[in-house]
Image (cartoon, rainbow, N blue to C red; front, side):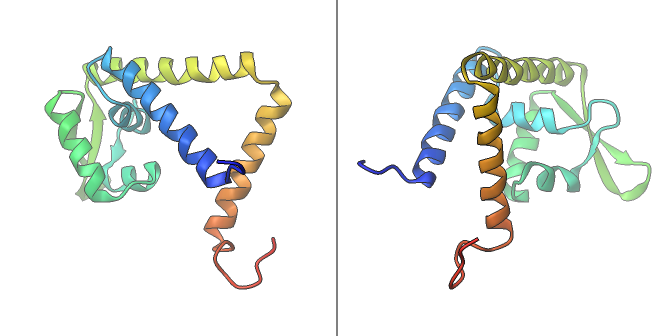
Length: 149
């Protein structure tokens, strides 16, 4: 492609990151999606099941499959929410805490390597650009007539 588009660069990079994380996760009998979910659960107080999807930016149907999978693996357990009798809190088990720790180490390693190989100023620009892209999307400024923000 002669002139690469921003969406192509984002998609191709995210696919490479996903592949990298999944290859590493295989070493721990897990997946990137499972690791991301474990990292999104509060290790001390648990997380309400209804809050997990929005926290991760996922639809409830996709998340329910992951929750079922990690529950079957013994990484989490569901407990009644003491503050809401209708709700459920998702808590990490001892094995879940261990897998969460490994997931965090993998993510931190990735970020450390980036910091060692990309000047801080360029990383800051990257974060500023991604923040601006997310803001434009959230404010629905991409597909409206005469948008030039």
